[in-house]
Image (tube, rainbow, N blue to C red; front, side, top):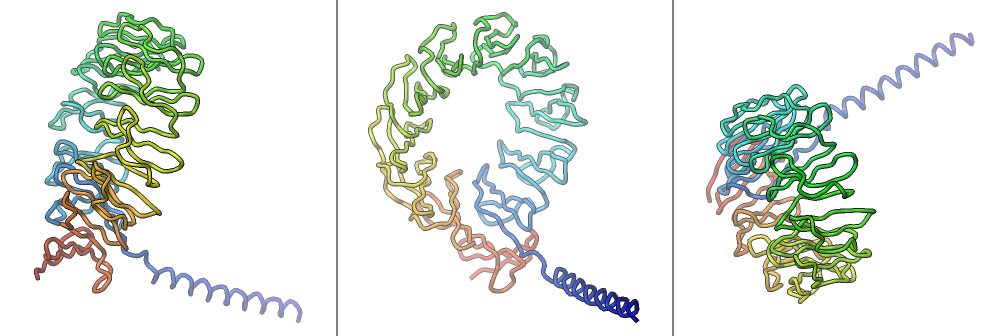
Length: 407
């Protein structure tokens, strides 16, 4: 009887587990993932990315989804082209959504001039503006063109090619960066120096690292410290710094003994002793003091007093700011022009900035007017997206227009 009792117990347990499994399976089957929406990306070339149910497309400023949400990944548009991915393959599309190249590449970079770097079958080559493979994929690795030359590697050594793919400096360097201002930093036998476009050494191999030239200056490193040199290799500063940024409009941000400052191209310090300073191209340097952020000029004069938890760079005259977990925008006078009430925000681009509040994405113009809203249609149909432009509503399912209404 005991074996039968154990058998009955086994059968009963199996039935119970089967019922539990089936109930759970049924529950999983009925509980589909919620309809998802991510908008609020920046506008570039008049289009902004939109992500519906994990797929990317593009929205224009009148609320139309011009490129259907069919892609697993997408870049912003740049000069009328965007990089998109389906599965593991990349390609270029135009701002009308047409494929410029097939989705055939393992990696792809944006155009720099008339060349774009691609990877196919494990090797690198370049496309022209029509999407033709004008430089065959034959390189182990390569960098995007900078001017007339690009770095490539062969047998783990770096050299340089011209825009037709011809070798102009044979591979011989352990590492190499692109040419800027006529010189390129390269490493050989563990030390960095600078060569010209014929491959001649212009600045000796004596640095632990060397950066690209910008505005006639470059940062070099030795024994863990940074210095600034000019195009002749002469030292503008000693090795006194933890790091020095590139120069922009005549100024660079440096770190010295853990504190941030600003210097001129002559190495003269104009500002020092800050917790943090961010390089700027518009003269408004974000700085941090006592855990709060503001903006100053190159001489340390405060343009916006530090009262914010986070700040972004000024774009089109406005800077994104955060206080107590909420976002808004200030103008160059430090005045709050878009209230600090939003859950997320992106900087101004193409005359528009995006913010999010309670799941709704709003696109604002430079007068802080709401021009476009994007949200899931929670009231009528939570499996579609509603776009409102000037009281005209459009309804999209899976990124495709289903219905349009006007009030």
